[in-house]
Length: 303
Image (cartoon, rainbow, N blue to C red):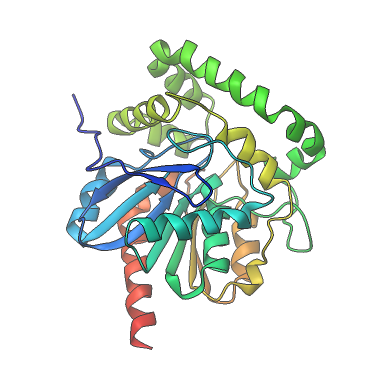
């Protein structure tokens, strides 16, 4: 069964320093903007088909932004994750967006939190699905894959460019057997993620996203890992924006304890635990996530 995977438009914004940020837009072009940050790995098509239709229904201008080094976004390594917030401010200015909500999956979570911390009243609310937690500093959460990766931070920094090239080459070589790769990964995943990958529309979405994201380059993955293992450059405890977390209690990539840790740090926060779901289960929470962002947006306007 074929699926309509094409976005409504795919803008490319030139930042003040000459770099580019690519994106894909779905939903209502005149609606309230919600910027969605993809996971690691991922790109600007990593959004369930149901969420794309839902954006139309809710009157949301849903914009998936490619991070530096993937798709059409120029390779770049910020000093820390907080540096990405200035990219997003310039990106929003270029698209004529004054205020926006945020939603992020997994590795996109730290970048959404950075924007919530640094962009103040421009951010209406932030929603984090299975988000990565800090691994450095006094807000660090113990354990998890990112915590383990901090042991190799110096090597990762030196090797990130060749690693990006190697991942890109691997992606291109394995593209013809992509469906088999998806099924193999699903077979090794917890039950919650297997349920996600068993659905044909989800398989199609992930394959399409990786094909488009890796068409030119694939440097964002090692850059993400390097930045995750550094101090993020902001404090979750200083975020004044409402932040809501969704997290599966069977997540084997980012432990539920990490979401609980971050929710306890953020002053205006809430955590929804999704029973029996693993790392990608939050993708099925799109209606709840987008509706919550809009409700929090309305609440801040009314205050």
